[in-house]
Length: 198
Image (cartoon, rainbow, N blue to C red; front, top):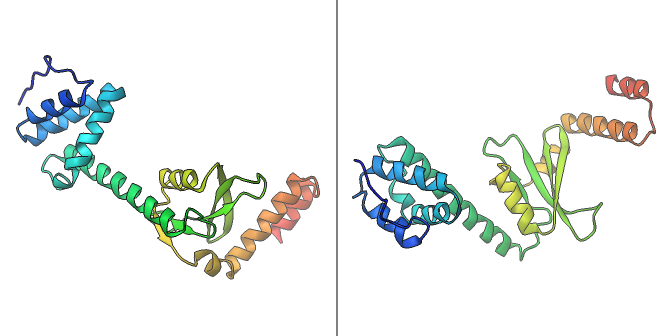
C-alpha cells in the first residue's frame, strides 16, 4: 500500500493522525508511516510517539515484525513510566535504600543520598563481587529515570544484604579498598599488586 501524505501538515497532531487514518489499518503501511514520522524528528516525531502510545497494546503481536517491535517498545515505555510514578509515590519521593536490578538479575543498584555531594542523590551499582560504579543526580526522580535508561527496571529486595555476607563480596570489597588506597597515594603500585594477589 503506497500512501501519499503530501497534502498533510505532518508537523501537526491532526496531520499525523490523518496520515495514520489513511493507512486503513494496514500494519505494514502503519510501520512504514511510523518509521518515516520518527525519522522526521521534532514535533512530528513526538506526535507519532503519542499516537503510537494510544494504540500500541493492539499491535504487540502484529504480523508485521517492525510494527510489533515498535509497539512493544512503546508499551515498555508506558509501563516503565507508570512503575516509576508508583515507586516514587510509594516512597513519598525518598528512594533511599530502594534496590532494583537489570532484567537478567545480574547487576543491581541501590538509591542513596550522595555522600560526596550533599543535597544530591545517587544510585550505586553492584553485583555479587561488590560495588563497581555510581551516578549522581539532582533528584531521586532523575536518578530513577537514569536507572531505567541504564536498564535497571526490575524491583529487587534485600539483594545487597544477601550479597554483602558472601565470600565473593568480601573479596570484591578488599579489591575496592586496595584500589582506593592506591588512588589516594597510600599504596605503591607494587604494594597494590601484592595485596591484590593475597
